[in-house]
Length: 249
Image 1: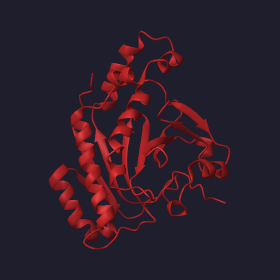
Image 2: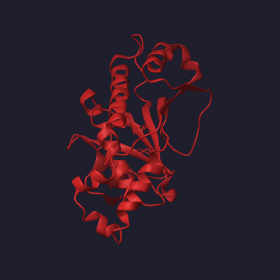
Image 3: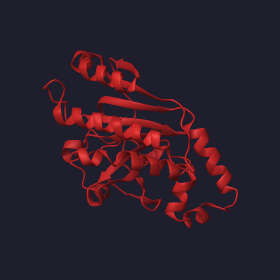
Image 4: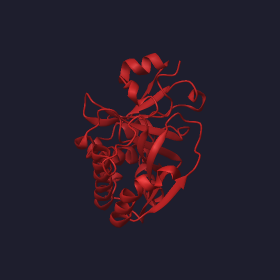
């Protein structure tokens, strides 16, 4: 069974000062995907991640439909432990993005991959800053840094699959209720966007202290930036591409 998505709308966030540089690329995105432009002058917030260009994916009806399907299914299960015993194939049949949504995401990812690899009219995008996809599942906001150091065109193809997996885990109760801001991370050992960083509220300003392994739904706890670095081997070039920089002193 697949969810049926409403309108998949896009919003494009970028610095006003770079509007001319992005003009050609924005026109291509609007022609192919529609969407609206949201230039900004000054941007700040509680996270360390600094974006130079962001595509926000708006899925009307996704949260409601995914939740309603999951709730009907969960009526027959007692608790989260019971859910975890259900096979991955069965879970995927319960809640999954539509093929239309997967194809649309794959097209957008391919477009972003091209501009990251080739630059804008011969001018490269600042690689120290993040190019991101951002989407919302219920009360969970998720960032995907598509120019994570070392990510190539092939890696982009697996982003829709990772998002689909996250939709399943969120809808089936694997994501803790207090997680509101998250980030997908590409794992080079497995060649998959395997980890979802979900720092606690207390962790902001210090270190990423919690994540989910999307392969098995297990939550991993991290005690320090040093432990984070040892486990995930982040590139120093990506210090501005994390919700909380692992290179904080």
